[in-house]
Image 1 (cartoon, rainbow, N blue to C red):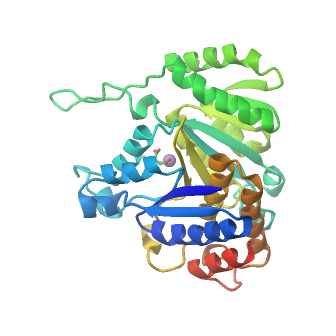
Image 2 (tube, rainbow, N blue to C red):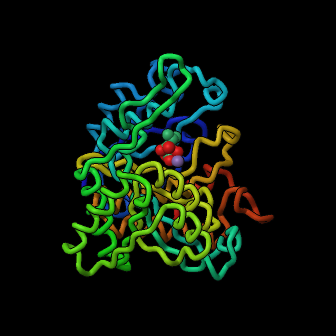
Length: 353
Ligand code: IPM
Ligand code: MN
């Protein structure tokens, strides 16, 4: 197969972890006989510094040309302490999601047996946890209008808005994923309070008969926040709106003990983007110590979701498991064993895939 992949390394540790994923993707391409082209473009603070825009048109064009986008991380502390900064790296991320139509953010949580003891939860609660969030990504309160302040600046407002169409396309992805998994779908909402949530629930109820093999549960977001900690094994596929999904997927990303190891995909009808759940970790930038596994696993998701190449995806997951088993890991999970550099882990994975 011939593949065009856009590389958007972004800020902080982004370039270092993307470089390792590229090594692994190239090795997989060689092993399975694919021709892979890469095209790199700036995003985030890096793009502000270069071009004055966190998601320049030139970068958008590179993404449009590609079959899939591999994204590192964005964010730079120099913007965090300046609430009045006119352009912020995060705006680039939101604009990119919107312009590429990436309406579904897929965030899995699964366990690595060798890391389970690092979970903040008791082992019996975590062993075998395997669920996936489908977070709506281009609607809701993140984008709803009106938003802003009154004239005096003494009141601020945001608008949460969802159309039936937006809910339907996200929910269908969730139903289809559930059919291929354990056939349980949880709709996470706040239907006891919010009109938008009542539309979510109603829409999902109407779709459910089309997927008779899937059991559907409806749960309030506050209850899910609790049950994710108490008994995360209760879940299989969860669907939810943008803001609830933002919060719950951060909660979910730490329960397996593999914080910093979870990958994600953002899917649209045409474009597909893959990125680690972790951020730009500026303190580690340039030190060759960041853990590249979340980005490498995001590349595995790319083979699966963007190209339908499951064996290639599995080969990456397998080599990651092997590196964990053999202790070829960065300092964050080395636990007194040898701490390998970011680049060494990437080289090892590429050589062993
Ligand atoms: C995420 C991030 C973003 C979000 C921020 C950086 C805008 O937290 O990808 O989850 O809230 O969606
Ligand atoms: Mn978030």
